[in-house]
Image 1 (cartoon, rainbow, N blue to C red):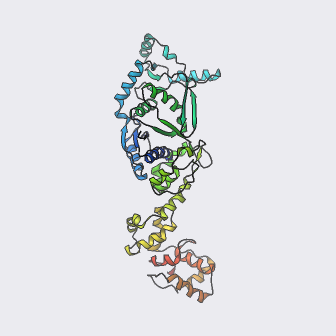
Image 2: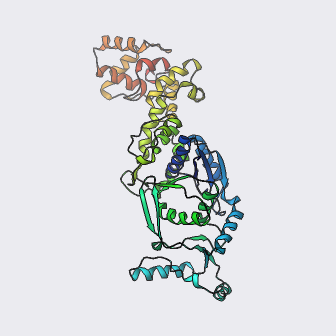
Image 3: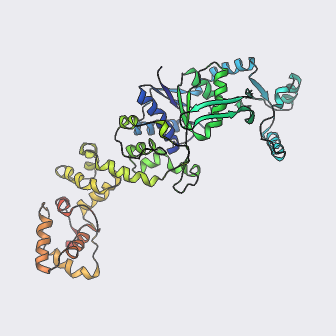
Length: 442
């Protein structure tokens, strides 16, 4: 049987690291088994779903290298949902309700005060047609709930192990709003059944949804997929991440220079027993991906951990990948490859190349400690004019050492700071041939 997985985002905003984790897990399952990965847009909420978010979503996935085999849109399947809804109504599995949100809230509070679970009491199931007509005449619009079978719902979760939920402890889920809008709780299981989805990985906050959707899939004659629920992400101190997810959108991380390989390498292993190590291809990620190695505990995520992964990735990028970017910075073609060899070992993100290009082309503002002022002034008179060669630094520092008697750190550090404006950086012998100007020379 062919493996079929899906990623079903709502295009009501930009996708973030939590979305990516879900998408990547489903993608890797399909990739590892030679199966099919479907991008399914949950766009039934026409007021909030925007084309700009769809375009951004696709752009983010393409940048990451997550390729979908086909695209589905729930907004194009409304006739199918209506058809299934009529079948469920005829089978007595959907019933119309008229309570307002205020009335439902009062019921829940009353149940809690009585020490009972706040589960819908199915009062609307017993309304006569006359009762329903009276409700409509009073200006109430009916919405539709699915009638759960009050039994234990069991499944073997790919991450959490054997799970069991008593349907009697869960309210009959609302599937269709009074406006007629089909909700996720209905469209998703219909799609999963129709599209032959075999595996679904999603967040642990969907466990209860899974229980009810298993019954819906069974009621419409579908085959229940294999479910797995990954842990939810927290901040580095264990704090809730949900309020910060907007700042952790893929587009924002991309704008900050985070490499796609860094994001993928982290999200493919975060929360598992495997170490997070940079992987440069999807095949490498898929090869070691195993759901059974993931745990259920909340998983800490720190965006700062993406920096060293990005740094490592950039250090291994071939020159051909960055050739055009370096040319755009104004680095002469004959120096471009050497510039990359030097700069690549001293950057976190590719945007850091701007600094090194400016240093090479325009020189740096010298940093000179007061006690070194006379020493630097004398040393600069001994530095020849550009262009510099691979031996310039060695020859110059040797000459300065002989003239001043300075040696070791007392010799090299003040000269580095005067030439580059910083205490640390690349090997000066390799950097000097790239410098077009040294400002400290005056």
